[in-house]
Image (tube, rainbow, N blue to C red):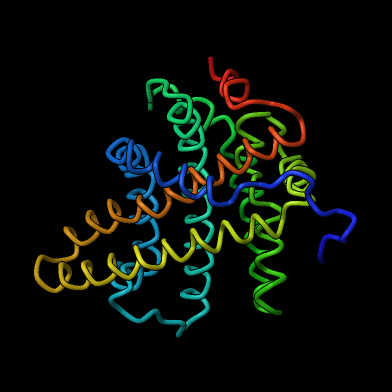
Amino acid sequence: MTDTPLDQPKVALGVGALIGDSFSILLGNFLKVVIIAFVPVLLGFLLTGGLIGFDAALGVGEPTFDSPGSSAAFGLAFVVEMVIYSLTTALLVQLAYDAKLNRPVQPGRYIGPALSALVPVAILSLVAGLLAGIGTLLFVIPGLWLYAVFSVMVPAVVIERVGFGGLGRSARLTKQYRWPIIGALLLALILIIVINLVVGLVIGIVAAIGGTIIAVILYSALSTIGVGYISILIALIYARLREIKEGISVDQIASVFD
């Protein structure tokens, strides 16, 4: 499970810089991130709410597992969420590189590459999510480690067009750097937990006062913050790994979209 001492990274990943740069890109392009992520997140939430109920999806109601159909609905909702996460990440990966290079952010330009990579990214995200979930059930650390192994799969598929070889490509890129990646992801997770707590509080109040429709729209909008941050961080981790291991710069990575 662990990297051996001989595999320790010779060049630091730079977790602090990655966290700071990701946060800076998010704040500097806040409205664009929200706009890009809002439509897929809202669509996913509507589909999920239709499957398991909007109160349960919002977190203001208890989920029910009183029949085989309800259990199947939750399983399908999980698949929907993974597909939407994959599409959103594929879109925001491209934004992250344009923002990093101080180039104009052009959402319309990101749609084609994201859609072309959607099928392998969605299927591989589901596989990686299940493996990491099983690892987490066994013990938290194996789950985190597996997540780190496959963490840069989405940018690998979108940028390098490796298709269903994305998991293997991610495993090769993250080798020797999985523990620093875990550290970066844990710091990001703390931020996302704080965001989700605030979102949950706001949504609970809105759902009680303004109704489900307003709560759904607001939930989708606020949820894009956490999704956007983690997607940007993953994009920068991928770029940093390619810089360290292959001497590939961010502008060379971004040039595939030109």
